[in-house]
Image 1 (cartoon, protein in one colour):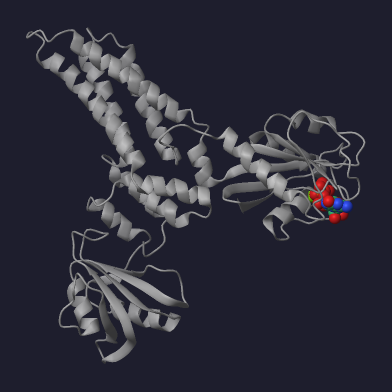
Image 2 (cartoon, rainbow, N blue to C red):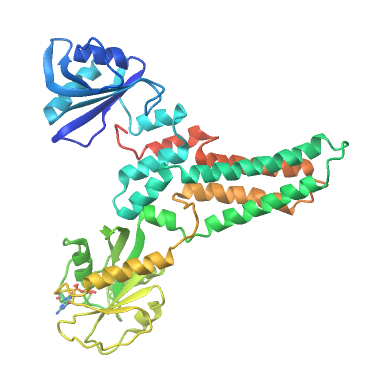
Length: 442
Ligand SMILES: Nc1nc2c(ncn2[C@@H]2O[C@H](COP(=O)(O)OP(=O)(O)OP(=O)(O)O)[C@@H](O)[C@H]2O)c(=O)[nH]1
Ligand SMILES: [Mg+2]
């Protein structure tokens, strides 16, 4: 079977790229270009035709030819660069659909083929997905590291070390009489202990990799009418929430995804906190307080001219808080003092908002800094690392002079969990969940 898809974004655009992969690609390309020969080392300047009626689809196009296995998918693959109008794209895709054994690719199918043909490992497949979907600078940097294989090398390395220890244990089982030096088991134990502490360190990372991938959770919380919804709208550069001078306007939590100067942030506006009478408002306030507890960072908005600060709001303030004293256009002297980071701003006049963004970034980067070479970017990796750790734990707790066989099994299981992060085992069952998020053409 041959698969094809538009690999560039939807038209109209200057150029669009259609990819075809499969064993008949060479012949298909010859038929639709009428080229006598398709060159590997050169860009093939050509026309594309509908072979059924010889109509020209695109009079000036390019064809890049990558014979397998040296292609992205590992199969024969061609990239057709055509003019990016919807009509040209549709005409070419229609011609391809009429070719024998040729069908539209499923989402992520080119990358899935690359994985199946051992061109890339599972971590790399996931990271290519992350790179395609990266929206902020931090996400791009993280995905680039993964695409370059840092994490794969690291996990493979750890796995090989466990396998080495496993070999020692197995040798002890097989050659018991031959009296292998006792030292061998001690070495294995020592090495596993070290790996155990390395994995523990990776896991205790405050989930920074996942945060960068999914977004940091920042909540806006504070008294009614302090300007919380105004701040959400200003930061997201659109009217997401209703702003009004009526106290208690916002009831539900309103979330929006932002690229805050390179930082992916899920910003939540919440109901103003006060001694509410109505049931609906009370519900909104309890949602707001709940949200503040889940947040990585709270922006507590206080009207600078207010006299007193509500006790519930005071309880929220801690080191993961930025106090935003708002409405400096009305009163420009700080009326409240806190021992946490505070900025005096005017949301109305867009004053000192750059300082707020800087503070948000600084606080997030401090809280989520990590010295680990490898960051966990998905829950899947975390689960596997935890499972691996459990097996290593079991191994370390066993009396190996008695339970040698079982100890070996612990290590075998540990390598399996570690291997499945990179995709050395159990690949099929996780394929579906990874590739469903890809776009067609990748
Ligand atoms: N003078 C002045 N008014 C502001 C500023 N920021 C917001 N406001 C006004 O304050 C009022 C309340 O603003 P909102 O953004 O709705 O306040 P909120 O905190 O979301 O209020 P609730 O949803 O009721 O809790 C509106 O009339 C805004 O225009 C500011 O910096 N200066
Ligand atoms: Mg509001």
